[in-house]
Length: 371
Image 1: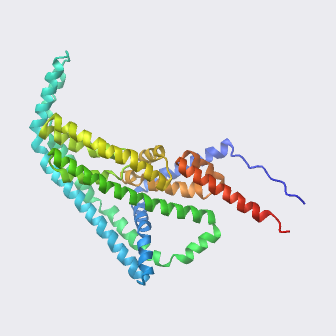
Image 2: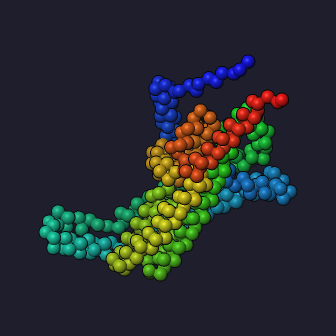
Image 3: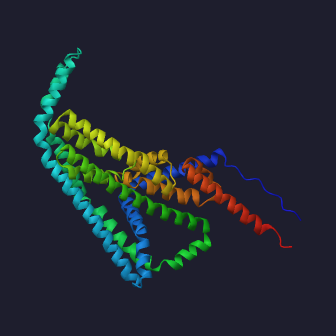
């Protein structure tokens, strides 16, 4: 008796509309629950990233609970240090910027006089010269600092969720085996998600440190004030895909213009372009893409999407959130894996193609009767 192959069912327009409607409802729900979902997911990615260190301690005969507590304390120290350094840097910038107000007004008026040579009517623009006040920028930075320190609710969620996840990680083996036996595709996709998130945080942190150090050295050579402050800004904005380079460039370029003139500003732009653009825009996306399997276009679109859905924290969690959605909605369902053609890099697509061939080969061997 021969088996007849049944043709694959193709999704209808109605089913596609239902899926899109469901995803839209889910996105709206995430938006309203963003104050809980975003910090909880951030805590999950941190604990997952530190999991290899916990396993290393357990293999070194450290008790499981003690290993979990040590890793948890290490994560707490790193987060606390990062928050303190960032808040201190922004506070220092907010205190220094107001003294450049007169210089900025002078540059503005010089620009208007230069435009007069080309017949530009500057009457309407000149009235704004007196309204230029970097105290407003300082107030904005102060608001950011206050918002950072006042986000105690989300910070508390991150710390508490990290604590319970660390405790649960000591007894996860039985539950993981249950998932692997019941839904092997989902288990494999989650393993890929954990590995991708871990590589993503490592790559971003390493490249962020490299970029920050190089930026500080360049700014010190040029003579730009607050060089270490802008180095911290470059490190933090490195976690924002694609546009972090621009965010980290504007403040030091403006200060260089006010302090040393147009030449210093151009040197800052050139230094950041050579260092940051080369490392963050060319090298890092390539390494990150190979690490997490997402194309640069998808990484950029995920930045805009997740920032709208879950707020400012979505800018930092854009790639991890996209990896989570990909693993649960695409990779865990063989019938939906064709969507990866629009999400992954060429190298990842080739790897997936080889894996599909291997799966077909193994399945064919299992169906072949023994003679």
